[in-house]
Length: 275
Image 1 (cartoon, rainbow, N blue to C red):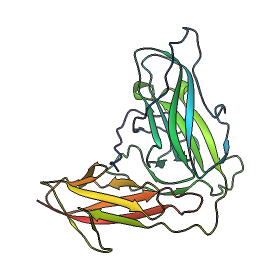
Image 2 (image 1 turned 180 degrees about the vertical axis):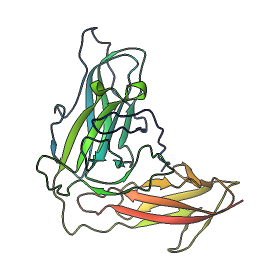
Image 3 (image 1 turned 30 degrees about the vertical axis):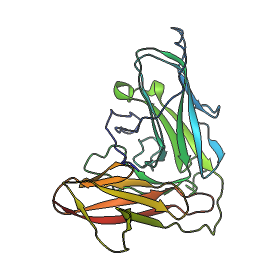
């Protein structure tokens, strides 16, 4: 699993505040150029802006369908916890695999384009662009009752990228409503291997700044984990980890969004950094 890297790309202006948003680029389904007088829009499952996406499975692949996207405009799609003030920008967004989608800008306008991304009912939320150091994050359950019949816990946010991130013309918001899950879901367990050897629970294995080491993370559920690292180390590829400095410690957070039969997982492993 690779490290999820976020890059600030401008501010999302709202009635009460702004936030810089970053994401991992995903493939898109593109089409011909558009007419000069065409009007931009973005929908999910045919639903228009501010319309709830209902009866969602615990995890499912969705697609933002965009029409009439002007030249040199990129887009983001991300699933986030709705802030206490829904007019402000979200700061807890799903950082798991395939859940932050970025559509790159092109020199040509596009009549239609699709942005695929994964929508999870539960996720470990982090700030896509923290203003002070790495985002600590917290677990988010989108099924929690907000106490307000007009407000869902989570929503998909579609917005412009770069210089257009503050442009309300490209912003679309889709509240999300997920189907119930079993109350007796199984607890997931993560197994970490370094150079094919299992890391014992409670141990603090060494990671060298001089040479990356092979690392494998598997879950008892068979689900794919997302690996989030601290600033002191990095997962260089799906199977390698390296220290970024020759001293101190590094914390790796292993996250799973769970599913209909398995609870979400958030666990950590500490590594000791050496030369």
